Length: 520
Ligand SMILES: Nc1nc2c(ncn2[C@@H]2O[C@H](COP(=O)(O)OP(=O)(O)OP(=O)(O)O)[C@@H](O)[C@H]2O)c(=O)[nH]1
Ligand SMILES: [Mg+2]
Image (cartoon, rainbow, N blue to C red; front, side, top):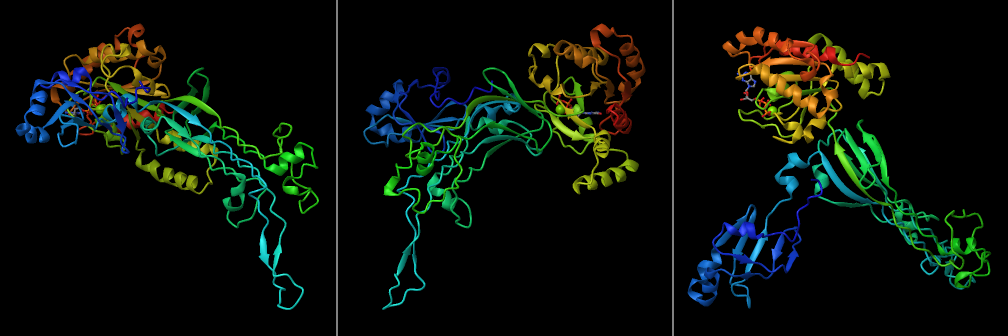
């Protein structure tokens, strides 16, 4: 799905025009405007209406202002004003990319091509002109020369091209930005001639500096693989981690360096020999030089690779349940997150993350630890302590029967449970069959990944502020406990009657979640 980028040529399909009265046959002479929109330069308008409009000039004005909406986001403007193209029409496609229309289908996957920058070219002798300075001892009438010609600067090798790194960034929460650009190319390396200007101080270097890398930010939990072979490159979970994906190309050799490697001292370029002002202490590049390559060589190409990125949220606990059960409401109640909550199914389309509030008496200690972390005084054990006190919880989209086969929002989002240690199963206690709902959710999890139903989980019978729902809870607990473990997996470690609306059971739930965290 990640590969389905907006096709610039697919602007009006016959299907889309079927709903509109005039039939359009549009020649595909199109060009891409600067903004990326597609503009049809010439198009044939083949409806009766159109042919009449082109034959009767009186109706031309009306036609001029008429706009025909053909497809979502696409506006066809009838325009007879274009000289020599009467009846012609302009199509301005305002179609946005699919990743913008349906972000929930694209936020956790992307395929991109990355290329390291080409190396800079080596410098030739011609470019390295001798420097001429004023002679401070010059006086009229004396033998002193007015200017002194300093030995020409040594030509420099080209710099290495920019490399591409993928960086795990705490503030990036999806891969959607990677859908806006399919190819990522780092900058080309500095040419040898730029060595003098490439760094402040105008100090001339023998090798132009390396080009700065291009860093692509991804959220924690991103797995990077080579597209073709599927080979794993990295699994970035910790913010700040970074991985080199495509190396920039080596810079080309400068003329003099090439001459030295070629071992031909007599081949002094520009009539100069080595003794004339050139130091003997330069390093010899390890890059092999072909014979007679005493002329400056070009920079090498950078590495290119097609990579696939897959994000799995990094959370300790996952909230699962049927749509409308109150998962997002519980997340809101026990964390500072503010997910969208509404009384219709599939309100949540992408996972929401929150950090569970700890108990008041532990808060002071936690604050202390966080301060220590900021000052860099934190020990490994304290780091683990912070983690165990602040479980991260992920609220996932609602599951329905058949989700493992792709029903509802599909199965892709279930992979976001992969990194969790435990789960909270939220069941609407006021629904028709809460015990059946629980069984459905557990079965779907088992069918997707049998390992999911082995993990410890807390069962919340939510919406217990509804009086009659609360009364059903003991009976529901009984039926859950009698369920076949082969079908629904392990039994819940705790069953709670909760209400995200009035806060019943929320404190208890937070405590249970803290218990489910691995001990340091
Ligand atoms: N009475 C009552 N209503 C609740 C409770 N928790 C949630 N609701 C309501 O149930 C509806 C759905 O809540 P959400 O939190 O959006 O449910 P969800 O499980 O996240 O739903 P999806 O995102 O669609 O899967 C909203 O109208 C909430 O106000 C509760 O404890 N009591
Ligand atoms: Mg929700």
